Amino acid sequence: MIKRYPALLPLIEHLTLHKITPIFVGGCVRDHLLGNESLDIDIELYGVSDTMELAKILKPFGKINEVGKSFGVYKFRYGTYSIDLSLPRTENKSDKGHKGFEVQTYSELDFATAAQRRDFTINAMGYNPLTQILLDPHGGADDLRKKHLACVDPLTFVQDPLRILRAVQFVARFDLTCDPQLLTLCRHMIDQGALEELPKERIFEELKKLFLLSAKPSIGMELLREIGALPFFTPLDLYEKTPQDPLTHPEGNVWIHTLKALDIMADLRIGEPKRDITRMFAVLLHDCAKPITTVVENGKINAPHHALMGVEVGQKFLENITNEHDLIANVLPLIRYHGAVRKLYDTPPSETLHLSAQVCIQDLIPVAKADFLGRGFNGTPPTSFTPGEWLYAQAHELGVLSSPPQPLIMGRDLISFGLAPNEQFKEILSIAYEAQLNQQFFTKDEAITWLKTHLVIAL
Image (cartoon, rainbow, N blue to C red; front, side, top):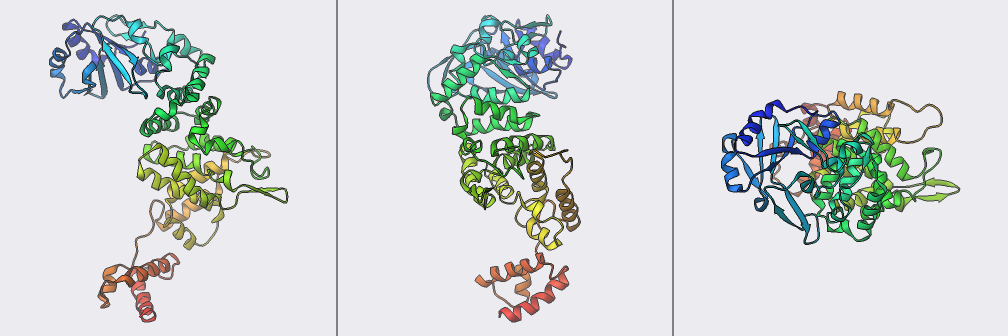
């Protein structure tokens, strides 16, 4: 039995007074059976024939946003809940892509037929809050107990290419095993170019769910490999073919290492989506240039300059899946400097100051930690990351954990010495900031003293 969502009873009773039967559907039902409360509630409304009348009925509940006007979907906030109300409908493929469907709504459609359009059986369940009965015409509850991911209808599943990536994030989020038929369908869809039909923003959203909501993103990544999707996400398809030095990476190739590192990074998430997704993508791509830089010399495997070259490779990968320029700008320095944490261990403070001017140290440390711990070890694996702990303490003491130090010498200081703004300004300010990072001065007064000497030399 599913709880009645007591906070939603006024809405439910209001609908029933107008002879509308509300059925909770989709993720909120699945999540409840998994023991999780969902604040996103999808409700199908049975017995509605006039969407204009529905809008009037919903008016007492505040601002209602109508989306998908042709088939009547209403969104609104109700207390802590985000509510989606929609009519039972069928969908038929009419064009390419995940939006290429003809939609037909029905006021008296039975639930089993309405649920036929859904992707997976675990998402095709419903709950009647009036009778407190679970509606499960496609066996979703049993599949959930068995940790089994199966499609509702093979004929309709292949019509939506986004479902490939939904399968990937679902198996990882809920630790499921794909039904053999589902694997075959996904492989077939990929062979037919289904992923190419998807807009990059939808691809990115599914990857975000994989990286932010799953305890072990490696499960989803392995499914991507198993169904043949990695060539779409090149250079990920080259990771498995790229060996690593067995002394430093006894776990094996770049693919194995990256998946281990992703799972470590998932354990290090802090609950801030923007920062977490930045770090996850940095880990995914930290060795993205190893496939093109790895060489074997005198029997030793090495990948010289892979961090530097990874900036270009990583940028191309990210631009293929997202238009979020801030994310890209934050990920690329993490790729470039992912090895710096161990290299700078126990070095002078000036090295930390210079590093802070290139990358956010607070994000870099967990990325480097995931890189270090995400590998095989001979003997007992370490549980700590000493270079990261040392760098954190030093950066914290210097006040540069999240941003570099503010320049002590500014343009107005140059003007106070009688200089007019010109092209030389930028050069002088750059040299001054470099001197500050090198700890040639520490205070404003010391900076001005340094500037007087420098200006004599420069001028």
